[in-house]
Image (cartoon, rainbow, N blue to C red):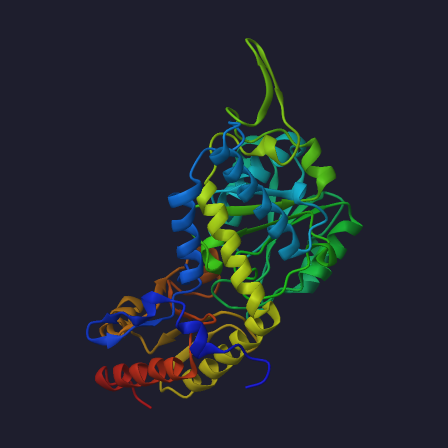
Length: 410
C-alpha cells in the first residue's frame, strides 16, 4: 500500500502487542490516553541506565558529561521535529499539563490583569481550562469560550465575534481528544495576532499524528507530551518563542536554574534552563529522543496517512452498527468516540475488554464538551501506527455482538 508504513514490521517492534487479554490477542485502542513503546525506546532507556547514568550539568566526570550531552541533544531533536527556530525555545516539563501551567503561572500571572480576556473552546481538555481558571480567580481575567456546531467543529464566526482588543491570549486544542476534529490553528493564530493576542496550541493529540511546523502555524506557545507519541511518561514539551520566554519569570525555583545565589537574592540562567529547576527526567528525555527518531524514520506524513485511513474505516464500519452513534465529524484524526444504544459506556468498555479490545470510556477529561452535547460520557477508540484494519474489524464485530446481546434494535 503506497504511502502507508509497513505495519507488520512496525508491530514487531512492540513487545506488548504479543499479549493476550482474557484469552484474546490484545487490540490496543487507547492511544489517545497513552501509546505503547517500541523496543528502540525501551532499549535506549535501558542503555542509559546501564552505561551513562549520572546527573547533568553538575560534574566534570565522564558519566555526567555524557549524560549532559545526550540530554541536550534531545532539545535540538525536539526543535527540529516541530521546526522551531532554536533549541532555546524548547523547555522540558513533566507533561503538556505542566507546560500549560508554566505559561499560566509565569506569563499569565506576570502580564495579564483584571479585565483581560482569554479565549478558549468548549472542546478543550481540562488541562487547558483549569490553569486559566486560576488566573480568573486570582487576577480577574475573564474566560470566554467558542462553541462547536452540530458537526463537532468550531464556530469560527463566533471566534471572530468574540475576538477583541481585550483578548490577550487564545489557547486552543489542535486536535480534539474526543471528537478527533482538527482545528484550523494557522487561521486562528493569524486572527488572534491581528488584535495583539498571543496563541497557545495544545498539540498533545496532534504531535503524535500530524507533521507540525510551529513557525508556519505561528504559535507563540505549543505544548505536547512524550507518552502520547511512543515515548516514556513524565516528560513533556513547552515550545515558546524566544523573545517571549526571555521576558517570562521562572515558574519553579531551586537548583540548576540559577547562575548565582546570594542570601537574599538569586540570579537565573538564560532560557530554557531558567524554567527547568532541579534534576529533570534525564532518561525520560533521552527515551523521548528515541521516540522522535522512530517516528521520523517512518515519516510523519505516512503516520498521518495511516491514521486517517484507519479512522476512516472505523467511521464507516461503526456507522453501520444498529443503535451506534458516532460523536463528531467524519473528517478526523486519531480518536473516534461513540455511544451504543442506551448502554452505559462502562458496560461497552468492559465487554470489549472481555474480547481483548482496550478502549477508554468516560468524559476523557473534557466534561464541558460532553455537557455541551448533552452527554455524561462516551466510549472512545483511538488509533496509532501499530493498529491494523483487522483490529478495526474486530472492534466492529465485538460491538455487533454486544448490540445483539443487549437486544438493541436494528
